Amino acid sequence: MGAPIALVTGGSRGIGRAICHALAQQGWHVVALARDRDALAATAQSIARAGGRCDIRLCDARDRASIERCVAEALQAHGRLDLLVNNAGGGSSARPLAADALPDGEWVDTLDLNLTGAYRFCRAVIPAMKAARSGAIVNVSSVAAHVASNLSGVAYTAAKTGMVGLSRHLAKELGPYGIRVNTVAPGIIASERVAAKYETFSEAERAGMLSRIPLGRIGRVEEVASVVAFLASAGASYIHGALIDINGGLFMD
Image (cartoon, rainbow, N blue to C red; front, side, top):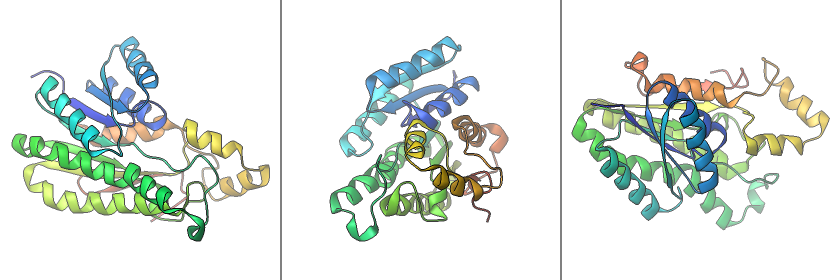
């Protein structure tokens, strides 16, 4: 039957690259998608050096045609898709604007990248998973789904909250087909984007952020990737419709 096939969006760096590595280490054949060819190539090369398998495809998670093309190409190349990880996303690289100052264009772009793209990827892979009567989807949300985001602003908060609702609806709809759907909600994780933004804060601001995290530190990308890899594994075969927080205690439900 060969290795199971995992499609990972935003797989070129940060949390996405760590997820690709974690899955490859578990024996998945990874198809990594992102907009940056050089960064994708670096992901594939590092996985190959570790003995894993990784294909890459350029894809813009904000563009419907790009999404549908990449999913079709992956299905044609591998014959099936066993896992979709919707990781592509992010907020502004600058300090977030107040809600009443946010331009429509930034709102739309942020939702397209973080939420609409995830829905379109789900829509594109679901027919193949239904036909196989198996599969898994892991959606990467954020602690912003629980509390307002200090780092990324109102549009990001709305999108990541929407991701949780999307996952819950799909879990009810797809469970009868043997397709598991779960969500992870990382807190402040030291990806390249977040680490760069974190550096723009004053010492007092950083201390204030860390004081709200009981573990007293920001997280590592590998700490998110290991949870995603577990949810994709046979060990999580009865975990469905769950939201797993990975935030050092910043939010406790």
